[in-house]
Image (cartoon, rainbow, N blue to C red; front, side, top):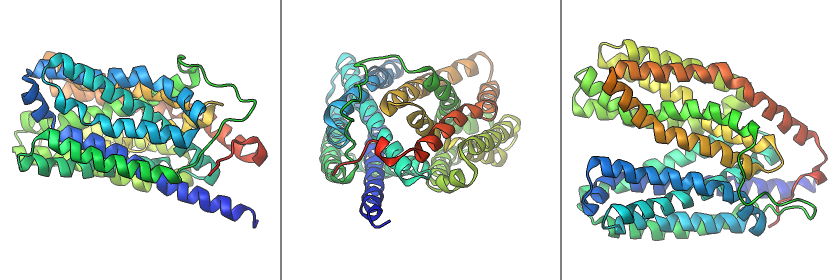
Length: 404
């Protein structure tokens, strides 16, 4: 037992370090989101042109994420994460410098690529910490991402309120977050590949297991995107709510998801990933039904809160399941992340298209139907749980060892 204490201390320290990495990553996203109107005005774009440019964020992420596994294998997890996270925090400056549509598309492609690669690297390290601790921590890590996003959003809102130039705002935020990110990476695990371990391919399609897990994540991210992007519009246009009340629905959903993710590990450790996702799906469906049949703002806002509560832990658990399901966690996580990024990309436009053709109520019927998929298909996470238990029971020497 005595020889386990130093390793245990190192892993616990690494857990806090990777949680800080998640918060830094989320802060970049929160900072960027608040200054999109400034970027649109600076580049002289219409709403349609802005939507086209923003799609390059997800496109860049989807193209680059499969490369993260190779980078991690080549440099080790700590060095790879430090470099990829620094690329992401520094890339925050690029969109504010773009003077037109073409340069903004290129900037957002680079911004998305660095986001996706650092996302895969930090989730793979989170899975390794979870494996070594023997209990769920991924939900809490993603809760820290949400907390970081809220912090970055608050700072960005203040900067916008003060009329600060986004180039100055992003430069200061980028400098602070880069220093913080590089500093905390000193304490993350440094997982090195074994001598006989084959490197992952430079670019490969995700394994079938990752696609199945990603389908569950697709349902959750679709519901998340619809809730965050359309909840205020639903309350304003369908229920004649005030602008302030409508906006509070979006903020409430974000807070609900952040709190649920931070508290979610206790639920997962008690009931397991499959039952947690299944129960979350039921809550999301109940929330969707409240939204669809609401005739007053209060039931609809309750429905959006239930939707956020139900889907909050699904994506973290999908990343964890993918990382535990195969020999190359980064490759599997990249596959799941690619599917979920695609969902986040198409959800807002699809909801808008359905609403244009029919109504917002029908759009949220689609969201509710997809939420049913969480309850129905949550069993695909069970094989990953079995694989995780098998690895936990395997001799310690068989596992890749963290090196300081």
